[in-house]
Every structure is written in structure tokens, then in C-alpha cells.
Image (tube, rainbow, N blue to C red; front, side, top):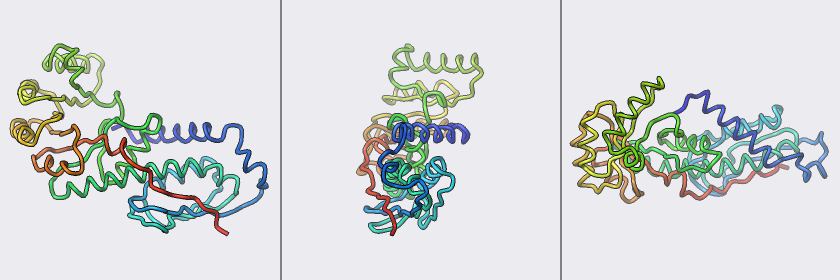
Length: 286
């Protein structure tokens, strides 16, 4: 994953761009009927159930819009919530609260859905020693938020983007002329460019795993679209040589069985691409 400084910068960019997109030259609905000096209070109301996520992000949004807005947190990040729970109160200029409202809700609804699904997967893996990973199958422009939500739900982050880890998949291998060629060319490239990036290599069958193991310097082998029997064989072949990761259509029904094959990680794009937003509202308090 990228550094904390890089991650923080991504969040700043998300906020600035989202406010630009949503507010433009002004929130004219609020400007038209609410005095600039008017103050108010609103509550973040849960109308669903699951894991709440995005509270820290909401605070950053409120601060960006108006540093004088005050947030009182009642429920901590990553907690289980139910219908009727109040997560926080925000108080200050009414125009500022309304300007931040949609971004806060859009982000928290999405992040909470991802955290909830991740927690379900984490619970299914309990006691196996296998960890759940996200992927790059994220919504363009808000990847940092979605990966943050995975962490809140108890999962682990895979690489953030194309630049922070080497991942040699089937197309890289085929275009490079084979597994050994792809790995050796990659190691040469890293040496020539003075980059320290971990190398993950995808294997499509047991023969490819045997070939990967003939070359050192591989951090993790991606055991892609294997059945249970071959996954167990792959784990035995790899042993302690490097880490192992299973992927490929793994869902709630199959994840524990793959974990019991002994892999270190299971990656799932479903954590971020197949969720339904948690229903949340920001309601004015009388």
C-alpha cells in the first residue's frame, strides 16, 4: 500500500473535487432561503443495519467546508449499528451543514456498505489464519475511500494502484513470452530503475506454480481460479517459499473452504464492486 502521506493526499483530492462537483459557484437552494448567519444542528441517522464507516472522513469534509462546524460523535467508527441509531451531531452554520451534507452521506453510505460486507467475510474466516484482501475493482476517483472502508471492516488492503506493487498477471506473462521471462525482466527493470517493489505472480495451474518457484524474488503467488484440491496442492508446493493468495469468484459460500486449504490471503473484488449502500440520513434537529 501507499504511504500515509500519499493516502492523506488522496483523501484531500477526493474532498476538493467532490465539493467542486457538487457545489460549483454556490448552493443556491440554501443561499436563497437561509440567512448566512443562521445556525443549526443536524444528526446522522441510521436507517439500516451493519458496520458504520466514514465518520473520520465526514469530519474532514465538515472541516473543509467550514472549520467552525462542531461534531459530537456518539458511535465509534467500525461499530455495529441498527435502525434508529444516531452516529453523530454536527452543529454550526446551517448553510455549511447543507453544503457538506450530500458528500458526507454519499461517502458514508458507500463506506459503511463496504465495511459491512468486509466484516461478513472476516467473520467467515475466523480461526483460519487467512486474511481478506480488496482489489483494484473500485469506483474511479474514490478508491482511497473504498480501501479505507475495507480496513474499517477488518480487512486488509492489496496494492493501491499500478505504481506501488508489481503484479504479473496472465496478460503480462503472455505478452512477456512466459513466466520466467516476465519475472526476470521485472527484476531487471526494478534494478535498473532503482525501485523497491514487491512482486506478485499469478499462476493458472500447478505447472505454472512449479515454474514460478524456480525463480527467486517473488513475494506472493496468486493462485487464480483453482479448485479446492489444486489449491491445497499449490499451498503444499509453495510451502514457506513465499506467501499465497487465492482469488477468482470466491464468495460467502466458498471463502472458508478456500481458507481451509491453507492460503495466507483471499482477495475479493466483491468487497467494493458488489455492495448496496447503507441507508443513512442527515436530519435537522429542532
